[in-house]
Image (tube, rainbow, N blue to C red; front, side, top):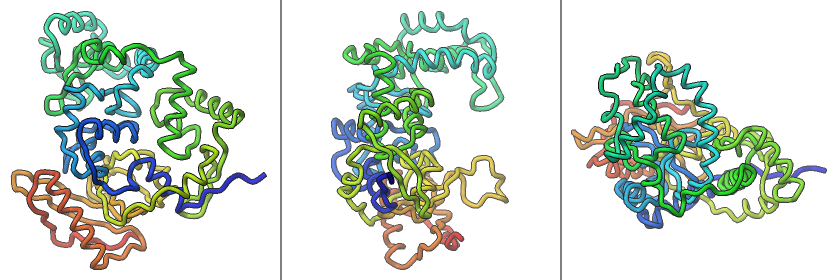
Length: 403
């Protein structure tokens, strides 16, 4: 028996709809409306890169262009409607998910013991009780408040002093939570003083957490392989995802489907039984351009983005400048249901300008006057969001269409 088949165009629409990129980026972006937006997305990755604005702010701005970073800070630090922990990376999550993370805390404690003893300098485990007692007595602390007299590393971002490593360990294992950030520096407090009491208790056993994790991932993706379900939250093992998939198929909660890629190839995935109807009902994304963060959840899985959109996207972190095709951390550009280019831009706030170094259209994308106007309109909006009053284009900024 042949599997249900989802062609590429409706698959893209469904995928973008589930990632809140198939509707105009308008509407309220503060308080419960912003918390609800993040719940729809699932989580927002946190990253320190700030060439235009930090990743978490750009992710939200791409979906609601009335968004202001202060609204996110309030939800995390005052309202406690959101909290920060780990999925595949550091992320901001809805507070109601906290109960599911108790299994993750235990899992990380077991897994990190072996790895961190190899990766980090000795002595951090001896600091656990000292740091917990200090925070209990003194209140929230950051890495700059601890580690007096300890050797400070010179080996880069991850060369932490023992007390900094201890803070991160206690956070990853749930004993501490991030109460706020100062600049980009985490400030930690005891979890019971950060997480509202209603969300502190575990939610079910391991089996219940696996079931929630897979269902919640599938509903936010529209269709997925077992590996993609596992990778969404990174809260379960690959074997648990495979086992869940088999059980869910047997009980009729999901069905195998074939998804058509941008190049016509087909890939087997899992979806809800009504996936074809859901895809048919998904709206056509607006034709305006949107500049996305490199860490946008729709693009986090680079292989999936290439399969679904024909967009090969790799951040060229370790490519030497002469061999680099694109600028460092170029931004993908979404237009309708297609990724039509990538742009190298940086905010120079002291000069009041957003400088565009280069734009590379994708293969087959013609840069006529209408498309250029749409791109310039989006850059004007991005400049204002970044605190700049104008856009400056470097000579030769419009590059040739990619082959």
